[in-house]
Image 1: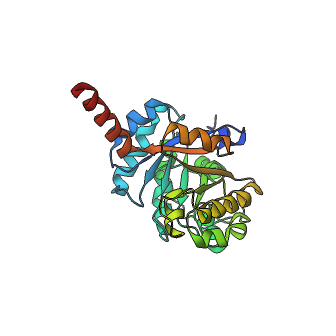
Image 2 (image 1 turned 135 degrees about the vertical axis):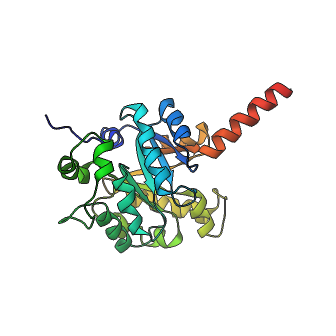
Length: 258
């Protein structure tokens, strides 16, 4: 009997539910095992800012198996480095995040890198991906295009200017509206109440809502995350690994020291 390759993030989003995850910047399968066991819907492995080599990424993707498919491994590739999509997917990642997408053509090229021909430009060699998900090579290849989550990050003034054209590109599952880089690009770093930032964010939200994609963003704490959920965001990053560890360690020490 053939196995089915499913992506629980896509299932949840298609059902109108919210999917929660966190960013992993440390090249540690041990940390991933703990985070997957904690119950996150997805883990975002960061090859853009994190010091994660491909061999560690492969081990980290395998470490999510502890959650039996309930924690989906997705990976952010470096900006303008589409060649990295191939080893990321061939290691078993079920999603790719593309940072600093600023034009429709960049979005088209990004989506194409995640799909096999004739619908895309992904080369064939999913040996470890097929093994990770318990499939034969052909079984995996026949299902991968539908299973992979595609996330574009809109985080610059150029992305705001071209948002309508970008979001018209077929195949985008999530538009991640990144507050830190967006505010930096607009010249008001961290000033989320600045009129120019609020206007830009509202425009991005309106463009995404015209499509079948869902909105994603960062929730630095529970209050911020819940506010974003009320505003219609469905793909929520809850903090990052370094901040989670730092907060827990400092909190424990401070409580003991009084």
